Image 1 (cartoon, helix red, strand yellow):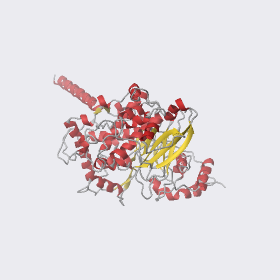
Image 2 (cartoon, rainbow over the protein chains, first blue to last red; image 1 turned 180 degrees about the vertical axis):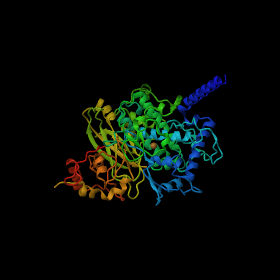
Image 3 (cartoon, rainbow over the protein chains, first blue to last red; image 1 turned 60 degrees about the vertical axis):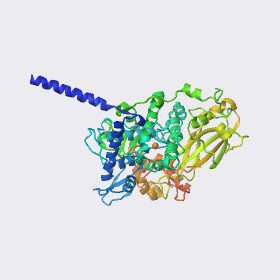
Image 4 (cartoon, rainbow over the protein chains, first blue to last red; image 1 turned 120 degrees about the vertical axis):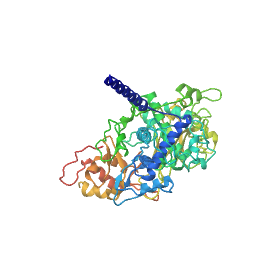
Length: 491
Length: 108
Ligand SMILES: [Cu+2]
């Protein structure tokens, strides 16, 4: 009898464990504005614990500093015994100092280097976030550890909340909580203090339209093994969000992840990646056998993690990260977090009389409308440097895209190119709103670190795909001479 | 005149050894250090090095040419003779030194 009860009890416990395992097996990443007070406090608590760890030892792989370095610190020196303590220092200043310290008895660590300007941009960040989320969940699974602000909440079911930056912010410019100076999510230096009037930037129509592209390289980036190159999402949305809209530490790749908004910003980007795959499949994604560089805590390696042949730490191959159900999270999207479909975009791309916008014919170019609708973002009206070239309009096979390459000879900081296509007999009047509205075809942004002294990065080339614009012009202007005018501006 | 890793190619890359050791190169075989003073390491990543050192040429589309730009922002390509020499070395099958066995490991 006792034995039977025991068996039942064990059985029940097993069931409970299994059930609990299932619940925590897929946490939910929600819009940060729709978190309950407790959910939000839990997220803040987990981040505070990460910061508390770094304050004691900045070289702790599960601390906030190290996780930020994963994004862009190739190499640090790790002392045999850490003596650096944050004390009264501002956390970010402390992390920056620790990253530069050299120890006689130290060994090298290789936190990581984000992949940008290539086809593994999305998946590299996804892998980074897989570890980050695991670390957060394990800070205080049962809610028994008091952080330095005196809080404790169980973190085991925590999912990284996302910021849908294509919708009107709940705060002045960002989700409210990021503007609350008492929150660990607040970070000084963002543009809110510099450019308070710019309150909206990325049009949801622009994003939804980019998502329609069936060509992986166009959307997601060009293969690393050749020349690389930004996909449209990266150069038209991700980069300018970093360097033009958010600013501060987010303006540079090597400091971006010091700002907690980085994680909610990129959690949404990961959802965008998921949405592209849902619509277009996973088969077209390139470089999935690439290994993703970063030094992460080994206990969170995926079961089938294989580090490959190299001598540097990594997160395994990209293809480990395709299926988010295996990574333990999913997205909850509601209402305004959904994207517009092709029919809705077509309906949107019409003039005031309901006629479809036609590039080169309508007074407003379709791209201008996508780019500017409902947001303060506009193509630059000031002239930076102009570059021009002519081309004869002819159909372009999307399999062999027409790539315009802008070569920046002095890439000291981020820059942007706004591209116009107009008949050769129409003068490029960048200062004229009429001109900009009618002939604007693309804007692309290169997100770069400020260069000083001997920087590892050399010059910079920005590839912009003009296939779609040329094919649109080919409908009405086949064989005609057109001019490509590029307005280059610095931030 | 044959081109060998030691001394020809090694001499070209000598000034950049320490700088490049900071970087990790991701490939489909694994993530590698790039030790420009080491024969195996240079052979393994020889195609990527080629893209980078030819990166200052106008027809190149690579975002990151090497060696790095000068601190005043000026272009800083290797002299053409050195790029040609490197390409010749690739063509010759990347010999380490006179009479040495050819590199047989994976090129990533
Ligand atoms: Cu980013």
